[in-house]
Image 1 (cartoon, one colour):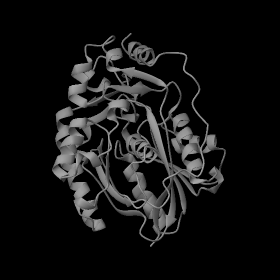
Image 2: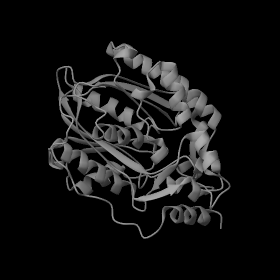
Image 3: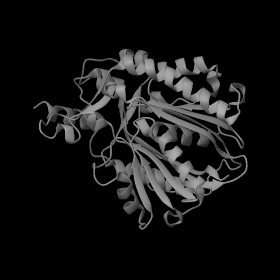
Image 4: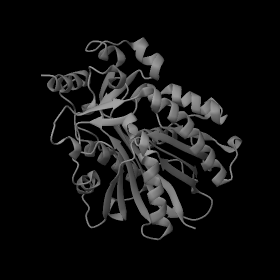
Length: 353
């Protein structure tokens, strides 16, 4: 059976860095408070649209695969922070890639969005509806952060990651995948002020979260999803070469790693540098892991995530023979004329005036 195989990978992170010390200048917090609770030291802040970051990551992934946008059958963007609610952000990415007449759609499963997208791509390839799919995870979360709420404002950042998926047979590629959700806990992590429910009583658009509820369900949900993915693939924990979890909180990652019984040296973490980038975190971390030489030909990799919804999912994939990009792209974002902390502070200040 044909299955999605990653043949190209790329990422995009804005140049503006906001450190914990920067945040301490505009809100009641400190580097120690943030680091001990989350593992985050800094995050990136975008001054451009989400679709701009997604497009840069996409072009870099296409270059790595040795393909052009015209070679694609489908563009899929996993995001909870599209440029606009209508149309799908994938359509804006399609236009910026200079192609048309191919399918383009978004998937919103919060931080689990990339794995949900991978599941949908698997179905498209299994039925023969598509052979080459561009799957992007891209988020611009900082405009949703209220600097008067330090429980959420210190956690999130902006960024994008992308992969090119090609249908292939053999042992390589996606070996198993499972996704799920519990909508009764949807209020545990949500965005107030955005959507038709808020049109009659407008309010600031901001992330709100019940941290304890999310933490408790995240650890249990990711462990169960990962165990199911391993069982479905016929792999033992000892077979895993690399675990790439959603980068939400270092304590969640550490607890999940311990419960799964995986060697911490096999776990990819970059939350200290980027914070929680939601649906972008797994493809961003995967791209870095490949470029850092942590992925070898035939590597057995587990992806696992948990997010708003509350959603969860896990996948196992076996890497192919190629670990070097076929090409590179020099495309990038334009320079910002403001510091990242200024961008965040100006947005938050406007809400409270």
